[in-house]
Image (cartoon, rainbow, N blue to C red; front, side, top):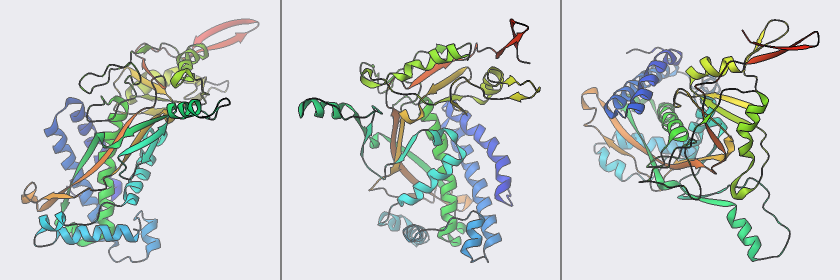
Length: 400
């Protein structure tokens, strides 16, 4: 397929992303591999076409203005060594002996791209753990200093406010088919291609895990039970019970989210804003009719809720369901492994004259407590009903 510029990528991207999502839901590894290969080929061609168009441009300001990121010295050194290894007479040995790992700044740049294009990843507590194996997070969200006796009680209080997470629980692998011709374009363009592919691989894997991860060899989803007393079977965390939601009026909505005000250990916390994650189909058929009102001037106002709420659409959530909760109470840490190695194969894509290399990322994600998210059933959600006062009487009518 021929791609003349990156703008044309968007049309093809939507079609391929649907294939990827369906393959993930069906557990069809072959279909996923085929769709992902199609996607990488599309991006590869787009990047190479763009590079050819700018090959004579040496002004860094012009390149930056056209979306080409300028590399740090560490990044340049990393990509240069990867290119040299992959172009050597014995690539397998050269990559085995490679003494550099993917710089933290590359992953940070991928994160920046992700948060711009995926609102769910922008909303949650997303951290680059830089290859750390264990990570401490605050689960109380309140001040930990207390009045009273010293030593034991204070130590107990501080200890109860933190959770240790093992970042090595999960491994996210991405295969990157690289045309050998692309290696001649240099570090900058290999970085651009690398970040786009990693970004898409991460976005699909992360959203699926954050929303509906079982906890077995993947993150624990927002719709799963966590905390003391939860029975985990063969590494799989149980689903939360769904809460039927038929209306989003102040009383109903306030009651729905009131449980979030009680955090771990029974402590109360202030709830200032929540997120509502829904499938795009449900947004148009359920949420939009239930959160749209008509003003006195006849115009419509969308996403009107009685409490500050950020509505996020995600294809990873099942139709008929919604997740409402505290975004900062979901932690997702991911980064490169300190001892990470790049592996490659010429045999896998030999006929296409492509070299495939594998990048491994380690991380883990889970809700910080069990009351931070509500798993809602919105299949019976009704359209908004607007109250109108006429000459001292109160009437209600559905907004149309």
